[in-house]
Image (cartoon, rainbow over all chains, first blue to last red):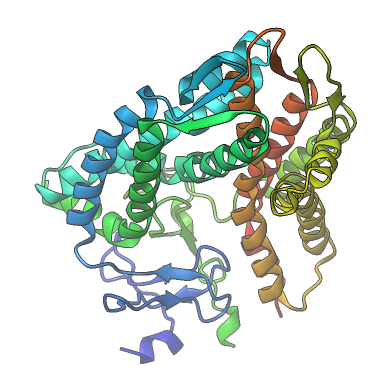
Length: 219
Length: 203
């Protein structure tokens, strides 16, 4: 097994199959590592984390994305934080922040906030759900690979955890001058945040791509 | 010897999205697994990154000199810039939060702008030493990018909550757009930078 690393005469067994992988960040040619659950495979040259297998990756992703989809509703629709200044009260939701920016004619910022706090987190969860459901039930679908690609590209644009930090900073700024009250939406939002974090770690991209490839071959 | 065995030198192309390898001869085709276009490196990575970075540098100036928001209470209040907001937090004894905002909205964008410039210089002048350290710099830049959105989200929350006409009001300023653009442009710049360029000139 290990010898083939030093003996790189690449002769694929057939024209479409190549038994190597390459590191995405330094392009080093590698034997496909198969780390055990709980272990990590790093690139020997640049240290890139190649794979970190998780127990029951598909099942967990499926379950977590259903939970996330349910939590999306209260987190988006119910008030996150309420404020009371000199008798005036006001509730804030994710959506009201977007609307307020729109009303001040900062449409660029409004669109950015809308995308990164509502659209991309939602799409992220929906795509994870679709992909893991298809893999769980072994159903081939010709869009699977495209979904997986979109999911990978929109990963970093879903910024729930940054939004949470924004809420904290805003609350600290307001705490001295006004009364704050935390709505049910905030608890749902925190739960959604935790679910999204767990989703990101449970989704093993290498395994998912391999399974997508297998499903395609079976078809 | 081992360090030279990259996919490219062995005539293989790694798909950007799904990671499967194809032979160089197939480079005009689509990836057999995911259907993405095959490129050995991100096309025009250097030029794209440089263009995005230059635009970000230009917008960094208005983002810092124009007011980012105006807080008025009972009709009085004045606009302040990003730095002004941090000073105000310091004056009201909220040091940890002031540090957080300082890191997220001043240090991180600056680190990204300078860091990506250094990475581009490295690629252009083919500095060969310490490729691993440069890759770590790239990873830090890519990871840290999204956290600068903190200020934008905070403004969005403040603007929607504190909207009580004469009693108290927060109005976002023109710097918000510029700052958001800096964050987005630097994120795109980091995404378009191909870290494999740092390794391609290894002897």
